[in-house]
Image 1: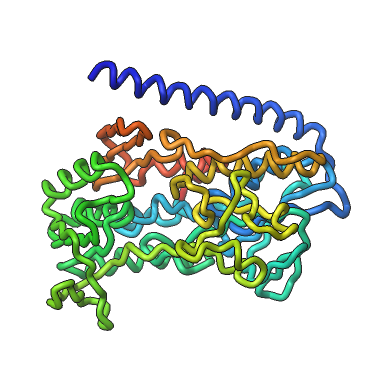
Image 2: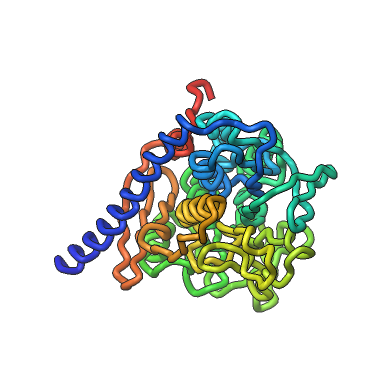
Length: 415
């Protein structure tokens, strides 16, 4: 056991050291870049479509390294950055929902003048050198980065693109929970498990049932996380139903089970159905969309996987891309570094030097909240030596201020 733990720590330390050195080198280059970058009257554009975790990190890395005469244009449908990690908790308890929406101007305030422009809008068409917005506006690009992520309904993601409307969506879930006695959660991924445990923890008199289509909770992770979550849920009194693909009936409150039986609930929360937002390439590069996963196919350099010449200047990363890495924000962070470095290298007339190889120990960990004050921190290991730590989380708002700081913003004290 001691040798196993020592080996795990050694492998983790090696990854942390390597990544830290890379970040230090980038910080040094970014500091020098801030002194030397000069805005241009007619800059060339690196257009980023999507401003969630992967897109905003790509924007930050690029604004810190693009040469003078170039700028980032980020096109994002939402008025504010949606801090999705907090959505389940803030839809269960009231009064914190505004903290889940971070103004983009706060995140990008350190960008050199002239290096960044944000446009709120929808991209509905791509061609060889421009994207077209739903409004009809055309934005030219020399390089295109697709970071459109995936779509999912509440409580995972909000439908409203306005931050006030999105706050109201979270409040509406809370009101429905208050008015319900029997609550069903469909889907046993991270969002479903967090919703079920938060509801039972903060509203202990509610009857909560979670449905998993598989034989365990959290099937995308190792068995250790299932064991941790199921033990906590069992103690709480959450009913766990396995190997059950429940179908929501038209009244939105009844479920048809695999055996044909129908069960009625006061509230049904659907936490499944994540779909990659790859549609903007459907006309331009249909061959680059996977026919099975519908994600965008990419090369190890994260350039579009297509025989067409235009593919060299198009990159994709994050949840929308078939990278082989975890569909986690941390993976998007590391992918964004590679995309930024490859684009800058190509601007300077060189071949893209970096290739993406997933580092599971760094990109795959998850901090899973399990109700009031309880958290499981899971670290996967490609050698199978997965580790899990149970910690106490004292802050009801999940210390969301730390999330703001990590993105370069500050949570207002009066929020």
